[in-house]
Length: 113
Length: 113
Image (cartoon, rainbow over all chains, first blue to last red):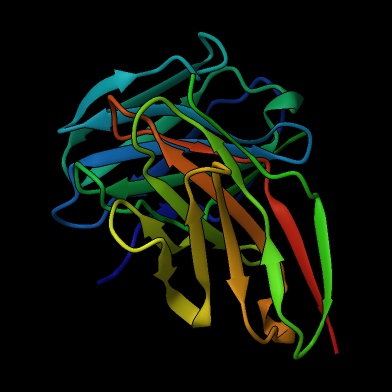
């Protein structure tokens, strides 16, 4: 298995710029999750999809954040416009529906200057 | 609401000694519990899960966890710690109605030579 693939691994940009994070889940997994990890707030679930449909986006901080899953093998998380407080590590995870564990990518470390 | 608590921010143990990382849960009904480990600059990795059956669950890298219903606990254990076990450990409970995992705040394990 190739595992969950995230890109880029690191992103540094200036505030106000648009940021797009990408995720390729494990083939055959039908649930996909976006998380954010910071020292202050720990690990937060932002949004999750099941069969490409957003099920729960209650963790999305504000309208500047949006996520899409156009097909079973690709998802994006977009921040527009970005702010310094968005600086964090963003993880994507995927799983099969049910009691199977989630598999995490290695994250995107985002720094907004 | 379902939740997990990890009462210790950090656990220190000498190499070769047994280790325990604590987790307690609060759920309605039967809990589905997970342990994950996170190494620096990596995503979370699944260690083990409890769904039903034996209260002692064996997982990866020699770790095991003991489910205790009366104490609502799911402590992670290893008989003999290695320096390479030093990492951040997360306990999680699966939401009953969705595929979401509710994570604890994490416990940093430091194993000293």
